[in-house]
Amino acid sequence: MRPTPDRVRETLFNWLAPVIEGARCLDLFAGSGALGFEAASRGADSVLMIEQQPSVANHLRQTVAELGAADNIHVLSADALVWMRQTPSVTPTFDVVFLDPPYQADLLSAVCVALESSARLSAKAWVYLESPIDTEVTLPRTWTEFRSQTAGQVRYHLLKIP
Image (cartoon, rainbow, N blue to C red):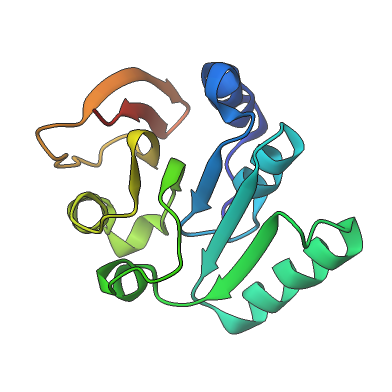
């Protein structure tokens, strides 16, 4: 696991400050859960963490239980791309989505395409992307870059979805 660096996370949540309270958030490659837990601590209404590794997902569930946050943080052990391609049933749309997949998997472009066509984004959603500085990401044409920065070897973006 490679958690989002503290200063990047601080910048991201400063950018999201006007929209995070009451938001429905999706942490699509949860890993350590740092982004999802931070969103919940800053007033997000709900956070769904998707984590492919069952042992990591179980650890996240344990942390959620220890924090007494089971009312608004839920953990699902699933492959993110498979989950997104499934037709949503009871799952609500999301206002904020965190995309920080394993760097070596080179998934960001495919995940963005799947997310755009998944019917899981609210009408005015925000998407956070994090990648190695030298990675090119193909974004859906309707997505607009709101902010972007680099920190060391990490490039991160906050995108607005019309």
